Image (cartoon, rainbow over all chains, first blue to last red; front, side):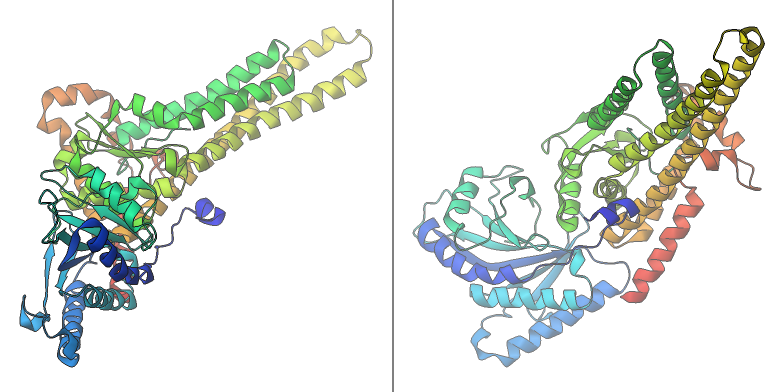
Length: 208
Length: 316
């Protein structure tokens, strides 16, 4: 914030940074080889919807866009297997904090990122970039990994353009050791959020 | 200066803040006058005054928490409140302030702290009990906007300027009059004659400096009201729904006026504040309370939010 903003008491809405998202596929490879974690193929995008009809219209538009993309590219024929076919393989839900989640899935991480990016771009172009909170990518233990790891997520913070790891272990507990290990692992592949106080937990997230 | 930021203007608290503020100014003025009277160096007095204001600024978070009986809570103690603050901070890209809860039945919230990094956001248990999650979020968005706007720093500087203006007026007048008197007097002969004059002059100086204090005080209050509107605006834009903040404001005000009928024991405890609504009923002209208030009227705030709602709906 500049001096004038302070003097005049105003804040500019922070635009979302969408670019760093594309670093995820290479990080997913590192996670699998060094961390024993593979993508579950699920991702969620969280945003604070404006009042009124706008939110539904926009989400409908995103659904159509994704459906067109699925039909057009033969590489992603496996996607669209779940969810309402009219919505093009994405479901949406509202969490306890009033944030909307668009849930997307695609077994291929690169395609998953592309799909999330398409949804992001639609929202940003409609002027709702400042309302984007985070997107969340689900990971689970690979077949040969130790069984003690349960669920693991990489969360992308739009306003920071950074990722952070989130490993919930039951009710309101998180595996900080795993999170810090992943931070060390992915330091080169991903912009990991350096400020630990911004690694906020998403306990009730609908992403698997 | 520590400012309790209530949502919305809660008159009992506003009166308390007003009296506190007035007393503070009088205290500064009186304290410095005494120091000067006992013959301390001018520079030394300035240093002391600056140190006091700086302490108020530096310890604003502790002073406010102490006076509101707020206690800091961990994410385990208040997961929902922390969850809301986490999300709002991620949306606004600001560092997360500490979170506190004050065990009072009055629905209220405030933010304080010298910088966004040292900030504390505090909600009362009454607020958390009465408002639903979306409304609590709206109120916290308003408070976080205060943090982002650095309102504690701005208001401290503003009130410092006010006090400084009053002081300087006084010093200048003293220096001018007594300097002139000393130069003209020369001998001690005219002492009997000018004794009464000196008293008169002193009274005039007092009067002028009091007027300057009062004006700066009113200006500070006006500034505070505008910054409340600014925080309403930024908060509403942050959550994207001005109407939710408006609903929270209405709800809190409604609850405030309902308190006396709802619980007699509560009414007893807050009796001291109930004289204010009767004073502020008058609608004609600018009421005194509107001038002294740190917060704009509910009507003013709701009108701004309604306008914002229309604008946001239009651009979408």
